[in-house]
Image (cartoon, rainbow, N blue to C red):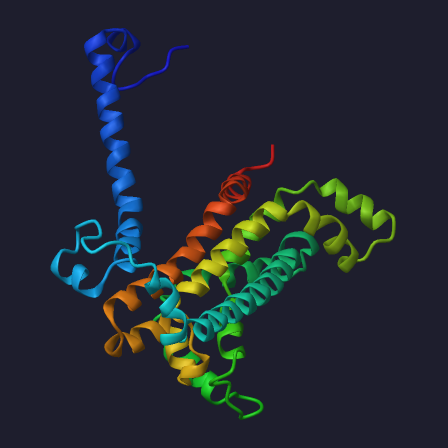
Length: 292
């Protein structure tokens, strides 16, 4: 069998074609590198430059030298510690609630398989076709006035954690992974007298670490960059995350300090992805695989 491509192996054997393809691949790689890492590098340059240098020559490399004091001064002058802690709390709570709801929901639909499981799966899938902006107002009114208790969740972390937990996409992705697990394991566990909770803790969760890592990373990054919903339900400045607080303080802050704060806010999720990219890519591959 021969591989089909735009350029055949005979043409690639020619020096001119071979060198031309290397140049094209190098140019494409360089373009992707500039498009992907360019904004991050420029933000780092602006974060370590004076305000006047950024305004006069935004693409010059430190005309007045590197100013590391911006990264240090952004913490006390912009209250970065408070906003960063709020962001961590919001992301951690969203992560925990999302895993609890999505894992248990996918486990019920995939492993326990109740009679009404097909209807529930169809309803969960149908929610993906509803734009999030459509449910924004009803969800906000529900947070302001809870149906049963009549209380309000505004300016509480539950107002952010609970809506993030109900994620149909994560339920479907985890369910697809659970569907590929060997059914013989569950049959053997039931024969040994294991209950649903024991099978979840002892069998499903240890085998599902790749997909749980993918969902965890997606949830943390999505919560880290969320702007509109925290802006609505967390109007108290002392509870706002970085995504909401930094645009608010931008009007009264120096550009150099603001760029430093933005660089710190962006650096953390990028570092998380780089640290767990192998697990992320492995989990995505396993989630898209089909059991043979």
